[in-house]
Image 1 (cartoon, rainbow, N blue to C red):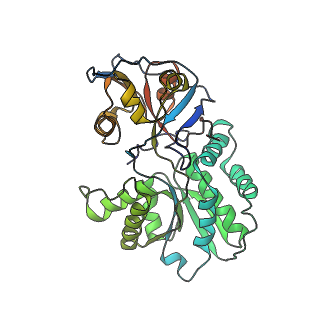
Image 2 (cartoon, rainbow, N blue to C red):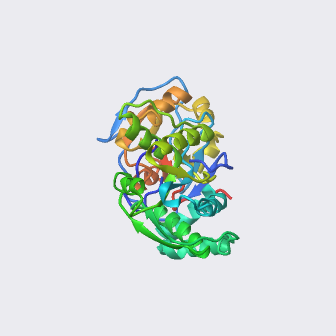
Image 3 (cartoon, rainbow, N blue to C red):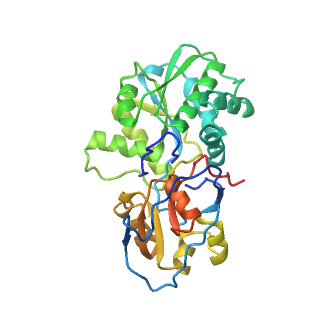
Length: 342
C-alpha cells in the first residue's frame, strides 16, 4: 500500500524500465524537520559501518530489488453497466495506458506542479505528441470522467477525455475529492463512469470494502496477480478495467547522488550491504507501516540509527535529503520535481 497524497502538488517508485532513477529537485523545498530533534526517534546502532548523509541537490532512487512495494500502475477503472455494448471505450483508454511510462508521468506532473500549466493544456499537448488525437476507433455518447483532487489525477482524467473526444464521444472531467468520495459515484455510474486509478491501492480499497477492514491483502509486487485480484473484486462491485500502464506511482526511497556515488550503491540491497546507522526520513506512520521502516529492516536488513518525522514524499523529506539531514528518504516515483531517468 502507498502513503496517500495530502496536497495537490504532492506526488506519489521506480519506472518499469529503470533500475535507478536519477532525479533533480527543480522547485524550492520547505524547511525540513530536524533529524535527531523532537521528530526523530533512535532505532539503535548496527554492525555495519556508519555512513553519514551527503548533501546534494541531485537525488537518486535506489532500486527496490527485493520488491518490497506493492505495484501501483495507472489503470482505467470503468463502470461496467455504463459501457455495456460499447466495445470501443476501453480499447481507447488502453491506448493511453500504452503511451505512458513513469518518466512521462514525471514530465506531465512537472508541467502542472512546477511549471504551473493547466492539466487541460498539458493533456492536450500529450495526446497530440503521442499521436493519440486521431484514433482509428470511433464512438459516441456522453462520458463523465472523475478525478481525485490532486494534479496527476486531473491530468490523467483530461488525457482520457481528450482521447475519447477525438474518437467522437462527448467526454468531460469532474474533480470529486478523495477515493472515499469518488468511488461510490463510480460504482453508481450516473455522475461518473470512468476514473484513472492505481492498481494496488484500488485493489486493497475494494478488498476492504467487500471483505471487511481486516481482509488479508491481495495486492502485491506481482502486477499480473494484482490485476487478476482487482478484476475479480471489480466484478463484485460492478467495475471493469482497462490494461495497466507501465507508468507507476508508488513509494520509493532516495539518497543524494553524491551519497550514492561515494558509497557505490544503486539498490536497497547494496545499501544494506554497505552502510549502517542510517537516518531515515518520512511521514510519522513510516515507523509502523510494513512497506516503510519495518519492511526496510526486515526485507533488506537495513540498520537505522534514527528516524526523522517529516512528510510522505513531500518537500520536507526532499529538502532534508538535499541538506544532508537524513540519509534515506521516502519519495514518490512520479513527483513532478524530479528529473525523468532518460
